[in-house]
Image (cartoon, rainbow over all chains, first blue to last red; front, top):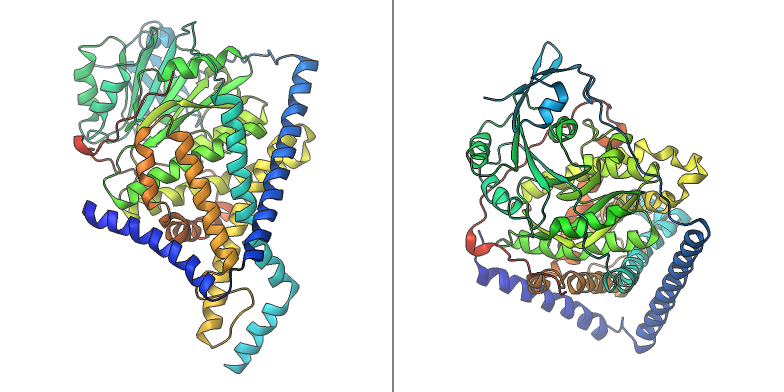
Length: 122
Length: 431
Protein backbone atom coordinates (compact mmCIF):
# COMPACT_ATOMS: atom_id res chain seq x y z
CA UNK A 1 0.00 0.00 0.00
CA UNK A 2 1.25 3.42 -0.91
CA UNK A 3 2.57 5.40 2.05
CA UNK A 4 1.02 8.68 3.13
CA UNK A 5 3.90 10.81 1.90
CA UNK A 6 3.55 9.41 -1.59
CA UNK A 7 -0.23 9.84 -1.47
CA UNK A 8 0.18 13.47 -0.42
CA UNK A 9 2.70 14.01 -3.18
CA UNK A 10 0.23 12.61 -5.71
CA UNK A 11 -2.49 14.90 -4.40
CA UNK A 12 -0.27 17.94 -4.69
CA UNK A 13 0.91 16.81 -8.12
CA UNK A 14 -2.69 16.56 -9.32
CA UNK A 15 -3.30 20.21 -8.42
CA UNK A 16 -0.02 21.19 -10.04
CA UNK A 17 -1.09 19.30 -13.17
CA UNK A 18 -4.49 20.96 -13.23
CA UNK A 19 -3.12 24.44 -12.73
CA UNK A 20 -0.28 23.68 -15.13
CA UNK A 21 -2.75 22.70 -17.86
CA UNK A 22 -4.56 26.01 -17.45
CA UNK A 23 -1.25 27.87 -17.61
CA UNK A 24 -0.24 25.97 -20.74
CA UNK A 25 -3.54 26.83 -22.39
CA UNK A 26 -2.98 30.49 -21.52
CA UNK A 27 0.58 30.47 -22.85
CA UNK A 28 -0.56 28.87 -26.10
CA UNK A 29 -3.12 31.60 -26.51
CA UNK A 30 -6.13 29.30 -26.06
CA UNK A 31 -7.31 31.24 -23.04
CA UNK A 32 -8.19 34.84 -23.65
CA UNK A 33 -9.89 37.33 -21.39
CA UNK A 34 -12.84 37.48 -23.75
CA UNK A 35 -13.01 33.69 -23.83
CA UNK A 36 -13.03 33.45 -20.05
CA UNK A 37 -15.59 36.24 -19.84
CA UNK A 38 -17.72 34.50 -22.41
CA UNK A 39 -17.55 31.20 -20.55
CA UNK A 40 -18.32 32.92 -17.26
CA UNK A 41 -21.34 34.64 -18.78
CA UNK A 42 -22.60 31.40 -20.31
CA UNK A 43 -22.15 29.51 -17.06
CA UNK A 44 -23.76 32.34 -15.13
CA UNK A 45 -26.75 32.35 -17.46
CA UNK A 46 -27.00 28.57 -17.19
CA UNK A 47 -26.88 28.76 -13.39
CA UNK A 48 -29.52 31.48 -13.43
CA UNK A 49 -31.73 29.39 -15.67
CA UNK A 50 -31.32 26.37 -13.40
CA UNK A 51 -32.21 28.42 -10.33
CA UNK A 52 -35.19 30.00 -12.08
CA UNK A 53 -36.61 26.74 -13.42
CA UNK A 54 -35.98 24.92 -10.16
CA UNK A 55 -37.72 27.58 -8.08
CA UNK A 56 -40.65 27.62 -10.49
CA UNK A 57 -40.90 23.85 -10.07
CA UNK A 58 -40.64 24.09 -6.28
CA UNK A 59 -43.40 26.73 -6.15
CA UNK A 60 -45.53 24.65 -8.52
CA UNK A 61 -45.32 21.77 -6.06
CA UNK A 62 -46.00 24.06 -3.08
CA UNK A 63 -49.15 25.33 -4.81
CA UNK A 64 -50.31 21.74 -5.38
CA UNK A 65 -49.66 21.00 -1.71
CA UNK A 66 -51.61 24.07 -0.56
CA UNK A 67 -54.51 23.23 -2.84
CA UNK A 68 -54.73 19.51 -2.13
CA UNK A 69 -53.22 19.26 1.34
CA UNK A 70 -50.78 16.58 2.41
CA UNK A 71 -51.11 13.10 0.98
CA UNK A 72 -52.26 11.06 3.91
CA UNK A 73 -52.72 7.63 2.37
CA UNK A 74 -50.70 5.19 4.38
CA UNK A 75 -49.56 1.76 3.34
CA UNK A 76 -51.05 -0.88 5.63
CA UNK A 77 -49.90 -3.91 3.72
CA UNK A 78 -48.90 -7.04 5.58
CA UNK A 79 -46.05 -9.26 4.41
CA UNK A 80 -46.94 -12.61 2.93
CA UNK A 81 -46.24 -15.50 5.25
CA UNK A 82 -47.35 -18.35 3.02
CA UNK A 83 -44.63 -18.06 0.41
CA UNK A 84 -41.36 -16.22 -0.02
CA UNK A 85 -40.35 -13.79 -2.75
CA UNK A 86 -38.99 -16.61 -4.92
CA UNK A 87 -42.22 -18.54 -4.68
CA UNK A 88 -41.12 -21.16 -2.17
CA UNK A 89 -43.96 -22.15 0.14
CA UNK A 90 -43.16 -21.28 3.77
CA UNK A 91 -43.67 -23.53 6.75
CA UNK A 92 -43.49 -22.15 10.27
CA UNK A 93 -42.19 -25.05 12.40
CA UNK A 94 -42.45 -23.42 15.77
CA UNK A 95 -45.18 -22.73 18.32
CA UNK A 96 -47.36 -19.80 17.33
CA UNK A 97 -46.36 -19.92 13.69
CA UNK A 98 -45.25 -16.55 12.31
CA UNK A 99 -46.29 -14.77 15.54
CA UNK A 100 -44.10 -17.13 17.49
CA UNK A 101 -41.28 -16.48 15.05
CA UNK A 102 -41.55 -12.75 15.64
CA UNK A 103 -41.03 -13.32 19.33
CA UNK A 104 -38.15 -15.73 18.86
CA UNK A 105 -34.69 -14.28 19.12
CA UNK A 106 -32.88 -17.10 17.32
CA UNK A 107 -34.39 -18.52 14.16
CA UNK A 108 -33.01 -20.83 11.53
CA UNK A 109 -34.27 -20.86 7.98
CA UNK A 110 -33.66 -23.74 5.63
CA UNK A 111 -34.89 -25.05 2.33
CA UNK A 112 -36.22 -28.58 2.22
CA UNK A 113 -37.47 -29.88 -1.11
CA UNK A 114 -38.39 -26.39 -2.20
CA UNK A 115 -40.16 -25.44 1.03
CA UNK A 116 -38.72 -22.70 3.20
CA UNK A 117 -38.85 -23.73 6.85
CA UNK A 118 -38.52 -21.34 9.77
CA UNK A 119 -37.57 -23.04 13.04
CA UNK A 120 -36.45 -22.04 16.46
CA UNK A 121 -32.64 -22.05 16.50
CA UNK A 122 -30.56 -24.07 18.90
CA UNK B 1 -3.86 4.06 -44.53
CA UNK B 2 -5.01 6.84 -46.84
CA UNK B 3 -8.38 5.18 -47.04
CA UNK B 4 -8.59 5.13 -43.26
CA UNK B 5 -7.56 8.79 -43.10
CA UNK B 6 -10.23 9.70 -45.62
CA UNK B 7 -12.84 7.70 -43.71
CA UNK B 8 -12.00 9.26 -40.36
CA UNK B 9 -11.83 12.69 -41.93
CA UNK B 10 -15.25 12.17 -43.50
CA UNK B 11 -16.73 11.00 -40.19
CA UNK B 12 -15.42 14.11 -38.45
CA UNK B 13 -17.27 16.25 -40.99
CA UNK B 14 -20.67 14.62 -40.46
CA UNK B 15 -23.48 16.26 -38.44
CA UNK B 16 -23.66 13.16 -36.25
CA UNK B 17 -20.05 13.66 -35.18
CA UNK B 18 -20.75 17.32 -34.50
CA UNK B 19 -23.81 16.49 -32.44
CA UNK B 20 -21.93 13.83 -30.49
CA UNK B 21 -19.07 16.25 -29.85
CA UNK B 22 -21.46 18.93 -28.63
CA UNK B 23 -23.21 16.44 -26.34
CA UNK B 24 -19.93 15.13 -24.91
CA UNK B 25 -18.83 18.69 -24.19
CA UNK B 26 -22.11 20.14 -22.98
CA UNK B 27 -23.60 17.32 -20.89
CA UNK B 28 -21.04 17.36 -18.05
CA UNK B 29 -21.14 21.15 -17.95
CA UNK B 30 -24.93 21.21 -17.79
CA UNK B 31 -25.23 18.48 -15.18
CA UNK B 32 -22.33 19.83 -13.13
CA UNK B 33 -23.99 23.25 -12.90
CA UNK B 34 -27.42 21.70 -12.36
CA UNK B 35 -26.36 19.40 -9.49
CA UNK B 36 -24.23 22.04 -7.82
CA UNK B 37 -26.82 24.79 -7.93
CA UNK B 38 -29.74 22.56 -7.00
CA UNK B 39 -27.92 20.93 -4.11
CA UNK B 40 -27.33 24.42 -2.69
CA UNK B 41 -31.07 25.04 -3.03
CA UNK B 42 -31.69 21.84 -1.04
CA UNK B 43 -29.25 23.04 1.61
CA UNK B 44 -30.97 26.41 1.95
CA UNK B 45 -34.49 24.96 2.01
CA UNK B 46 -33.98 21.75 3.97
CA UNK B 47 -30.74 21.72 5.90
CA UNK B 48 -31.17 25.15 7.41
CA UNK B 49 -34.70 24.12 8.49
CA UNK B 50 -34.41 20.39 8.96
CA UNK B 51 -37.14 17.98 9.97
CA UNK B 52 -36.92 17.91 13.78
CA UNK B 53 -35.85 14.66 15.43
CA UNK B 54 -38.79 12.47 16.21
CA UNK B 55 -40.46 12.93 19.60
CA UNK B 56 -42.55 9.83 19.07
CA UNK B 57 -40.68 6.56 19.10
CA UNK B 58 -42.37 4.04 16.86
CA UNK B 59 -40.73 0.66 17.06
CA UNK B 60 -37.93 0.22 14.57
CA UNK B 61 -36.42 -2.99 13.24
CA UNK B 62 -32.80 -2.56 12.17
CA UNK B 63 -32.08 -5.37 9.72
CA UNK B 64 -28.59 -6.36 8.64
CA UNK B 65 -27.99 -8.98 5.98
CA UNK B 66 -24.60 -10.58 6.52
CA UNK B 67 -22.47 -12.96 4.50
CA UNK B 68 -19.01 -13.83 5.81
CA UNK B 69 -18.70 -10.64 7.83
CA UNK B 70 -16.62 -11.89 10.76
CA UNK B 71 -14.05 -9.14 10.18
CA UNK B 72 -16.55 -6.33 10.72
CA UNK B 73 -19.74 -7.57 12.36
CA UNK B 74 -18.49 -7.09 15.92
CA UNK B 75 -17.89 -3.36 15.50
CA UNK B 76 -21.16 -3.00 13.63
CA UNK B 77 -23.02 -4.65 16.49
CA UNK B 78 -21.31 -2.32 18.99
CA UNK B 79 -22.55 0.70 17.04
CA UNK B 80 -26.05 -0.65 16.42
CA UNK B 81 -26.63 -1.57 20.04
CA UNK B 82 -25.49 1.91 21.08
CA UNK B 83 -28.15 3.74 19.05
CA UNK B 84 -29.86 6.47 21.01
CA UNK B 85 -33.46 5.33 20.53
CA UNK B 86 -35.81 3.75 23.06
CA UNK B 87 -37.66 1.16 20.97
CA UNK B 88 -35.82 -0.94 18.46
CA UNK B 89 -34.48 -4.38 17.68
CA UNK B 90 -31.45 -5.42 15.70
CA UNK B 91 -32.03 -8.39 13.41
CA UNK B 92 -28.98 -9.96 11.84
CA UNK B 93 -29.72 -12.23 8.90
CA UNK B 94 -26.83 -14.59 8.39
CA UNK B 95 -27.09 -15.66 4.77
CA UNK B 96 -25.33 -19.00 5.00
CA UNK B 97 -21.96 -17.59 6.05
CA UNK B 98 -19.01 -19.99 6.07
CA UNK B 99 -17.09 -18.08 8.71
CA UNK B 100 -17.71 -17.10 12.34
CA UNK B 101 -20.34 -14.43 11.64
CA UNK B 102 -23.20 -16.32 13.31
CA UNK B 103 -21.01 -17.34 16.24
CA UNK B 104 -20.04 -13.72 16.93
CA UNK B 105 -23.68 -12.63 16.82
CA UNK B 106 -24.82 -15.49 19.06
CA UNK B 107 -22.23 -14.61 21.67
CA UNK B 108 -23.38 -11.00 21.65
CA UNK B 109 -27.02 -12.06 22.01
CA UNK B 110 -26.19 -13.35 25.47
CA UNK B 111 -25.70 -9.80 26.69
CA UNK B 112 -28.36 -7.85 24.81
CA UNK B 113 -32.02 -8.85 24.42
CA UNK B 114 -32.56 -6.48 21.53
CA UNK B 115 -30.35 -8.56 19.29
CA UNK B 116 -31.88 -11.32 17.19
CA UNK B 117 -30.38 -13.71 14.69
CA UNK B 118 -31.97 -15.33 11.66
CA UNK B 119 -29.54 -18.00 10.54
CA UNK B 120 -30.22 -19.06 6.99
CA UNK B 121 -28.76 -22.43 6.15
CA UNK B 122 -28.96 -21.67 2.44
CA UNK B 123 -27.29 -18.69 0.78
CA UNK B 124 -29.84 -16.90 -1.43
CA UNK B 125 -28.28 -13.46 -1.66
CA UNK B 126 -28.79 -10.16 0.11
CA UNK B 127 -32.22 -9.38 -1.32
CA UNK B 128 -33.70 -12.70 -0.16
CA UNK B 129 -31.99 -12.42 3.22
CA UNK B 130 -33.76 -9.10 3.77
CA UNK B 131 -37.05 -10.39 2.33
CA UNK B 132 -36.97 -13.42 4.64
CA UNK B 133 -36.48 -11.16 7.66
CA UNK B 134 -39.32 -8.71 6.98
CA UNK B 135 -42.24 -11.02 8.01
CA UNK B 136 -40.64 -11.68 11.40
CA UNK B 137 -39.71 -8.11 12.32
CA UNK B 138 -41.76 -6.14 14.83
CA UNK B 139 -41.25 -2.63 13.56
CA UNK B 140 -43.43 -0.72 11.12
CA UNK B 141 -40.19 1.02 10.17
CA UNK B 142 -37.42 -1.20 8.86
CA UNK B 143 -33.93 0.24 8.66
CA UNK B 144 -31.70 -1.73 6.34
CA UNK B 145 -28.00 -1.37 7.07
CA UNK B 146 -25.00 -3.07 5.54
CA UNK B 147 -22.90 -5.31 7.75
CA UNK B 148 -19.83 -3.08 7.63
CA UNK B 149 -21.70 0.07 8.61
CA UNK B 150 -21.22 2.04 11.82
CA UNK B 151 -24.03 4.52 12.41
CA UNK B 152 -24.02 7.56 14.61
CA UNK B 153 -26.08 7.08 17.80
CA UNK B 154 -28.76 9.58 16.71
CA UNK B 155 -29.36 7.88 13.35
CA UNK B 156 -32.85 6.59 14.09
CA UNK B 157 -34.09 9.84 15.61
CA UNK B 158 -33.27 11.75 12.47
CA UNK B 159 -34.71 9.18 10.08
CA UNK B 160 -37.90 8.27 11.92
CA UNK B 161 -39.25 11.85 11.98
CA UNK B 162 -39.85 11.79 8.23
CA UNK B 163 -42.31 8.91 8.52
CA UNK B 164 -44.86 11.11 10.27
CA UNK B 165 -45.84 12.01 6.72
CA UNK B 166 -48.02 9.16 5.54
CA UNK B 167 -46.70 8.87 2.01
CA UNK B 168 -43.05 8.68 2.91
CA UNK B 169 -41.94 5.23 1.82
CA UNK B 170 -38.23 5.51 2.51
CA UNK B 171 -35.55 7.78 3.91
CA UNK B 172 -32.02 7.58 2.53
CA UNK B 173 -29.15 8.10 4.91
CA UNK B 174 -25.76 9.69 4.37
CA UNK B 175 -22.95 7.17 4.01
CA UNK B 176 -19.44 8.53 4.52
CA UNK B 177 -16.29 6.58 3.74
CA UNK B 178 -14.38 5.33 6.77
CA UNK B 179 -11.43 3.41 5.23
CA UNK B 180 -9.37 6.19 3.76
CA UNK B 181 -5.86 4.85 4.24
CA UNK B 182 -5.44 4.13 0.50
CA UNK B 183 -5.44 6.62 -2.36
CA UNK B 184 -8.50 4.93 -3.80
CA UNK B 185 -10.27 5.28 -0.45
CA UNK B 186 -9.48 8.98 -0.34
CA UNK B 187 -10.82 9.55 -3.86
CA UNK B 188 -13.99 7.64 -3.00
CA UNK B 189 -14.41 9.66 0.19
CA UNK B 190 -14.53 12.80 -1.94
CA UNK B 191 -16.73 11.04 -4.46
CA UNK B 192 -19.37 10.05 -1.93
CA UNK B 193 -19.43 13.50 -0.35
CA UNK B 194 -19.42 15.35 -3.64
CA UNK B 195 -21.14 13.24 -6.22
CA UNK B 196 -23.49 10.91 -4.38
CA UNK B 197 -24.58 13.39 -1.72
CA UNK B 198 -24.83 16.33 -4.11
CA UNK B 199 -26.91 14.30 -6.55
CA UNK B 200 -29.21 13.06 -3.85
CA UNK B 201 -29.80 16.59 -2.58
CA UNK B 202 -30.42 17.88 -6.08
CA UNK B 203 -32.76 15.04 -6.99
CA UNK B 204 -34.75 15.59 -3.79
CA UNK B 205 -35.43 19.17 -4.86
CA UNK B 206 -36.85 17.84 -8.11
CA UNK B 207 -38.85 15.28 -6.16
CA UNK B 208 -37.60 11.95 -7.39
CA UNK B 209 -34.28 10.29 -6.70
CA UNK B 210 -32.29 7.71 -8.63
CA UNK B 211 -31.67 5.48 -5.62
CA UNK B 212 -31.60 5.31 -1.87
CA UNK B 213 -28.29 4.53 -0.21
CA UNK B 214 -27.83 0.79 -0.15
CA UNK B 215 -25.63 1.19 2.91
CA UNK B 216 -28.33 2.75 5.09
CA UNK B 217 -31.98 3.31 4.38
CA UNK B 218 -35.16 3.37 6.42
CA UNK B 219 -38.33 1.94 4.87
CA UNK B 220 -41.96 1.90 5.83
CA UNK B 221 -42.70 -1.82 6.00
CA UNK B 222 -46.13 -1.44 4.45
CA UNK B 223 -44.63 0.41 1.50
CA UNK B 224 -41.98 -2.28 1.02
CA UNK B 225 -44.63 -4.98 1.01
CA UNK B 226 -46.83 -2.96 -1.33
CA UNK B 227 -43.95 -2.92 -3.82
CA UNK B 228 -43.13 -6.59 -3.53
CA UNK B 229 -40.04 -6.19 -1.29
CA UNK B 230 -36.53 -6.51 -2.76
CA UNK B 231 -36.03 -8.11 -6.16
CA UNK B 232 -33.61 -11.02 -5.91
CA UNK B 233 -32.83 -11.01 -9.62
CA UNK B 234 -31.63 -7.41 -9.67
CA UNK B 235 -27.93 -6.67 -9.25
CA UNK B 236 -28.72 -3.66 -7.06
CA UNK B 237 -31.79 -4.29 -4.94
CA UNK B 238 -31.68 -0.75 -3.51
CA UNK B 239 -32.05 0.98 -6.89
CA UNK B 240 -34.76 -1.47 -7.89
CA UNK B 241 -36.85 -0.90 -4.75
CA UNK B 242 -36.36 2.86 -4.96
CA UNK B 243 -37.96 2.90 -8.41
CA UNK B 244 -40.78 0.60 -7.42
CA UNK B 245 -41.60 2.83 -4.43
CA UNK B 246 -41.63 5.97 -6.51
CA UNK B 247 -43.69 4.39 -9.27
CA UNK B 248 -46.29 3.66 -6.64
CA UNK B 249 -46.07 7.32 -5.62
CA UNK B 250 -44.29 6.89 -2.33
CA UNK B 251 -42.01 9.71 -1.35
CA UNK B 252 -38.31 9.02 -0.75
CA UNK B 253 -36.57 11.56 1.44
CA UNK B 254 -32.88 12.25 2.00
CA UNK B 255 -31.64 12.88 5.53
CA UNK B 256 -28.05 14.17 5.49
CA UNK B 257 -27.83 14.03 9.30
CA UNK B 258 -28.35 10.26 9.23
CA UNK B 259 -24.63 9.68 8.95
CA UNK B 260 -22.98 6.29 8.89
CA UNK B 261 -19.40 5.23 8.32
CA UNK B 262 -18.99 2.67 5.57
CA UNK B 263 -16.19 0.79 3.88
CA UNK B 264 -15.36 1.05 0.21
CA UNK B 265 -13.17 -1.16 -2.00
CA UNK B 266 -9.48 -0.49 -1.51
CA UNK B 267 -8.26 -2.18 -4.68
CA UNK B 268 -8.96 -1.43 -8.32
CA UNK B 269 -10.27 -4.95 -8.74
CA UNK B 270 -12.72 -4.57 -5.88
CA UNK B 271 -13.83 -1.16 -7.14
CA UNK B 272 -14.26 -2.53 -10.65
CA UNK B 273 -16.50 -5.34 -9.39
CA UNK B 274 -18.59 -3.02 -7.24
CA UNK B 275 -19.13 -0.36 -9.88
CA UNK B 276 -19.78 -2.96 -12.55
CA UNK B 277 -22.57 -4.29 -10.35
CA UNK B 278 -23.94 -0.78 -9.87
CA UNK B 279 -23.85 -0.06 -13.61
CA UNK B 280 -25.53 -3.39 -14.30
CA UNK B 281 -28.16 -2.69 -11.65
CA UNK B 282 -28.94 0.71 -13.12
CA UNK B 283 -29.23 -0.69 -16.63
CA UNK B 284 -31.58 -3.43 -15.37
CA UNK B 285 -33.78 -0.84 -13.68
CA UNK B 286 -33.86 1.36 -16.79
CA UNK B 287 -34.83 -1.65 -18.90
CA UNK B 288 -37.57 -2.60 -16.48
CA UNK B 289 -39.08 0.86 -16.17
CA UNK B 290 -38.92 2.13 -19.75
CA UNK B 291 -42.72 1.85 -19.82
CA UNK B 292 -43.09 4.67 -17.30
CA UNK B 293 -43.34 7.06 -20.24
CA UNK B 294 -46.69 5.50 -21.08
CA UNK B 295 -48.20 6.76 -17.83
CA UNK B 296 -48.63 10.53 -17.40
CA UNK B 297 -48.91 10.05 -13.64
CA UNK B 298 -45.26 8.96 -13.47
CA UNK B 299 -44.00 12.08 -15.27
CA UNK B 300 -42.00 13.16 -12.24
CA UNK B 301 -39.74 10.16 -12.80
CA UNK B 302 -39.14 11.01 -16.45
CA UNK B 303 -36.30 13.50 -15.79
CA UNK B 304 -34.50 11.02 -13.53
CA UNK B 305 -34.87 8.29 -16.14
CA UNK B 306 -33.72 10.54 -18.96
CA UNK B 307 -30.76 11.79 -16.98
CA UNK B 308 -29.71 8.23 -16.21
CA UNK B 309 -30.00 7.31 -19.90
CA UNK B 310 -28.02 10.39 -20.87
CA UNK B 311 -25.28 9.49 -18.41
CA UNK B 312 -24.93 6.05 -19.96
CA UNK B 313 -25.07 7.55 -23.47
CA UNK B 314 -22.43 10.08 -22.49
CA UNK B 315 -20.16 7.29 -21.28
CA UNK B 316 -20.44 5.49 -24.61
CA UNK B 317 -19.92 8.64 -26.66
CA UNK B 318 -16.99 9.78 -24.56
CA UNK B 319 -15.26 6.42 -24.86
CA UNK B 320 -16.07 6.38 -28.56
CA UNK B 321 -14.68 9.87 -29.06
CA UNK B 322 -11.50 9.04 -27.19
CA UNK B 323 -11.06 5.95 -29.31
CA UNK B 324 -11.74 7.90 -32.51
CA UNK B 325 -9.32 10.65 -31.52
CA UNK B 326 -6.63 8.17 -30.51
CA UNK B 327 -6.92 6.37 -33.86
CA UNK B 328 -6.88 9.66 -35.75
CA UNK B 329 -3.74 10.88 -34.04
CA UNK B 330 -2.11 7.50 -34.54
CA UNK B 331 -2.45 7.86 -38.31
CA UNK B 332 -1.42 11.51 -38.34
CA UNK B 333 -4.86 13.08 -38.63
CA UNK B 334 -5.91 15.88 -36.30
CA UNK B 335 -9.62 15.32 -35.60
CA UNK B 336 -12.13 18.09 -35.13
CA UNK B 337 -12.66 19.08 -31.51
CA UNK B 338 -9.75 17.10 -30.10
CA UNK B 339 -6.41 18.00 -28.61
CA UNK B 340 -3.72 15.77 -27.08
CA UNK B 341 -3.88 18.00 -24.04
CA UNK B 342 -7.30 19.09 -22.75
CA UNK B 343 -8.50 22.20 -24.57
CA UNK B 344 -10.31 25.17 -23.06
CA UNK B 345 -13.71 23.51 -22.72
CA UNK B 346 -12.10 20.31 -21.50
CA UNK B 347 -10.50 22.28 -18.71
CA UNK B 348 -13.79 24.07 -18.03
CA UNK B 349 -15.41 20.65 -17.60
CA UNK B 350 -12.70 19.56 -15.21
CA UNK B 351 -12.94 22.81 -13.27
CA UNK B 352 -16.73 22.62 -12.97
CA UNK B 353 -16.30 19.07 -11.68
CA UNK B 354 -13.91 20.42 -9.07
CA UNK B 355 -16.40 23.12 -8.10
CA UNK B 356 -19.05 20.43 -7.66
CA UNK B 357 -16.63 18.35 -5.60
CA UNK B 358 -15.84 21.41 -3.49
CA UNK B 359 -19.49 22.24 -2.87
CA UNK B 360 -20.17 18.62 -1.92
CA UNK B 361 -17.27 18.56 0.49
CA UNK B 362 -18.49 21.83 2.01
CA UNK B 363 -22.06 20.54 2.37
CA UNK B 364 -21.08 17.20 3.86
CA UNK B 365 -18.40 18.83 5.95
CA UNK B 366 -21.22 19.90 8.26
CA UNK B 367 -21.65 16.26 9.17
CA UNK B 368 -18.16 14.86 8.69
CA UNK B 369 -15.36 17.25 9.54
CA UNK B 370 -12.75 14.86 8.13
CA UNK B 371 -14.03 14.91 4.57
CA UNK B 372 -12.52 18.32 3.79
CA UNK B 373 -8.95 17.06 3.88
CA UNK B 374 -9.63 14.63 1.03
CA UNK B 375 -10.18 17.55 -1.31
CA UNK B 376 -6.41 17.49 -1.80
CA UNK B 377 -6.97 14.52 -4.12
CA UNK B 378 -10.02 15.96 -5.85
CA UNK B 379 -8.31 16.70 -9.23
CA UNK B 380 -7.70 12.99 -9.61
CA UNK B 381 -11.45 12.59 -10.01
CA UNK B 382 -11.94 14.47 -13.31
CA UNK B 383 -8.42 13.78 -14.57
CA UNK B 384 -8.33 9.99 -14.08
CA UNK B 385 -11.08 8.43 -11.96
CA UNK B 386 -13.84 9.53 -14.33
CA UNK B 387 -12.21 7.56 -17.15
CA UNK B 388 -12.31 4.40 -15.05
CA UNK B 389 -16.01 4.90 -14.36
CA UNK B 390 -16.65 5.45 -18.10
CA UNK B 391 -15.02 2.17 -19.00
CA UNK B 392 -16.97 0.31 -16.33
CA UNK B 393 -20.28 1.77 -17.52
CA UNK B 394 -19.51 0.89 -21.12
CA UNK B 395 -18.50 -2.67 -20.27
CA UNK B 396 -21.30 -3.49 -17.80
CA UNK B 397 -24.34 -1.99 -19.51
CA UNK B 398 -24.81 -4.31 -22.54
CA UNK B 399 -25.01 -7.47 -20.44
CA UNK B 400 -27.62 -5.88 -18.21
CA UNK B 401 -29.71 -4.57 -21.09
CA UNK B 402 -29.52 -7.71 -23.20
CA UNK B 403 -29.05 -10.38 -20.57
CA UNK B 404 -31.51 -12.98 -19.45
CA UNK B 405 -33.82 -11.99 -16.64
CA UNK B 406 -34.66 -14.06 -13.63
CA UNK B 407 -31.26 -15.15 -12.34
CA UNK B 408 -30.85 -14.55 -8.62
CA UNK B 409 -28.07 -12.11 -7.79
CA UNK B 410 -25.57 -13.19 -5.12
CA UNK B 411 -23.05 -11.13 -3.27
CA UNK B 412 -19.27 -11.31 -3.34
CA UNK B 413 -18.12 -8.45 -1.13
CA UNK B 414 -14.72 -8.64 0.46
CA UNK B 415 -14.67 -7.25 3.99
CA UNK B 416 -11.66 -6.33 5.99
CA UNK B 417 -11.01 -5.02 9.43
CA UNK B 418 -10.51 -1.27 9.54
CA UNK B 419 -7.44 -0.40 11.53
CA UNK B 420 -8.36 1.69 14.56
CA UNK B 421 -6.06 4.59 13.73
CA UNK B 422 -7.35 4.85 10.15
CA UNK B 423 -11.03 5.13 10.95
CA UNK B 424 -12.61 8.40 10.13
CA UNK B 425 -14.35 9.70 13.20
CA UNK B 426 -17.58 11.24 12.15
CA UNK B 427 -18.32 14.68 13.49
CA UNK B 428 -21.73 15.25 15.01
CA UNK B 429 -23.77 17.76 13.07
CA UNK B 430 -24.23 21.25 14.41
CA UNK B 431 -27.34 21.57 16.58
